[in-house]
Image (tube, rainbow over all chains, first blue to last red; front, side, top):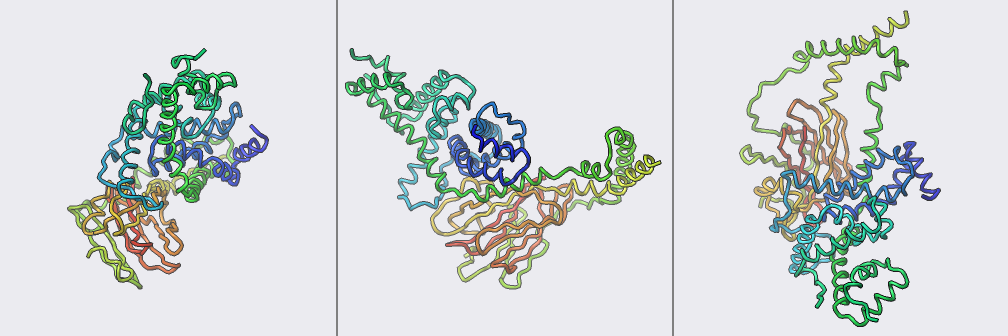
Length: 189
Length: 169
Length: 149
């Protein structure tokens, strides 16, 4: 951990709000990417971002610097996102499998058929990710969405690099099976 | 000697993730030049990655986070406020042994007062069906409409701004 | 001597303020505020608004509802909170009374700093109040307010 980040964390531990804002600015994108990668839904992802930062600032006094801070951030983000998915599964809240409504975006106007296809694919991806075991899902999101190296992933998931590779391999294999027809699969003769 | 697909398959993923050593990378590249099946597998992994990543990239680009920070800041500030107990303790400069002496009689007295005083301070209004949840509306500048339906659990207050602001037509 | 005096002050303090503490404890209500853009451009309802779909349907006849913001506010009694919706429109919400399963809110809407609406309403569990009308882009802003006890 660099001196600059150590100083930032120390200031946070002393309740310095400006330091907390700096940490927010530095990590909110990464946490949102992990959250959105898991839940594939804007409002839920934003809820997770908020929850993660509140957790981080509440427990920052316990951070002893044994791992790098960003590893700690990633681990907290992923655990919070996965807990969120578990809670949603248990609750009787809104199901998003209904395809009756479309979500409007602020982006450039897409053709309606393209919007419908994108939405259908996203629903399939969300469903497929939900079917993966937590550890494989975490590996897939860290690698495919966030681009972490095997070593960074091993630290964030507290496992060996061999385990990281195994989780990635089985996660990818399962996703390719579940998304057959939506994503091209390589053929081997 | 040409490596078989089965021996290359695990290396293929490492190669895709740019985690191969120099020698491993060369081995995979040599194999890919001659094997359409492994080329297809590589392509398939690229497409899976794009499918997983593209919506996330798009979502991040569209998002502004300033208001998220405001919410977090408010939450942190609320949690940072000392509890009333700590404030009183600090004000009286109480030490731990001293606090123990007053705590039990103070709690007992407070409970007694709450038990006796609550009915006096908090009279329960008799429950009755209240058809209107809106107590009043006021606007010096615009027309306002109130729509309530107990059956449909709907209560709408609508402020009319401009000629096109009528949603009920 | 000092010990006995302080003892008495503490007990008196607690006795006098106990009822207030009870009311203060009741005074923290989690209020959900959703800010929605309603329009007749395009069609569809944001999936996050499914729980209030019925309230957004008839008599409102918009074809499209998009969630702009979803805020969870911790309101203390008689402490207004102001939310800037966009450059010209803001909302001020105050919890004015709270009983066991009822919360009373005063809601004021401002356009360019001037008040355009002042209203007071009671909310019970499961009830959502819809306050709408301020023009926004090609539609109107709707505030959906509900309380969690």
